[in-house]
Length: 180
Ligand SMILES: [Zn+2]
Image (cartoon, rainbow, N blue to C red):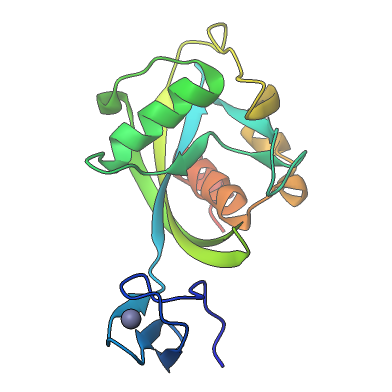
C-alpha cells in the first residue's frame, strides 16, 4: 500500500482508496480520485545595502529552533511575489510591496504536515531594503532574526535544505566568484 495522506474518500466517505500510482488514490466505491500534488510556497531572500541577508530562527515546528527564511504556503489568488510580500510582513514586519520581490529560483522541498510529508515547490524571491531597522519578528513564528554576511551563513543549521541552497544561489548570483 502506497503511503497516502487520505484515509477516507472526501466525496463519499468510503475507506477503500486504491492506489493508482504513488500519487493517485481512487475510491473503490465512487471512483473519486485523490492526488498528492506539490504545494507552492513563497520564500523571501531579503538583503540590506551591505548584502547581508535576513535569516530567522524558526519559532514553530517543523524545524523549531532551526534557521530559515520568511516564507509559507501561497494562498488562493496570490502570485508568488504577493505570497512572499505577505509572509515577509507577517513574520518579520517589513511592509514591502509585491513589486519589490524579484524571482530567483525554485527548489523542491518536503514539509511534514498533519502526519504526511507533503512535497512543496519553494519559490524564492529577492527583495532589498536599506537596513533591517524596521524588522519586528512575530514571536508566534520567529524566535529571533539576524543579519548575516552571505559568506558567514551557517548552512548546516537550516531546517530545510531548499532554503540553504537558495542562499547559495543568491550568493553566486551576486558574487560570481562564489559560483561553483
Ligand atoms: Zn468515494
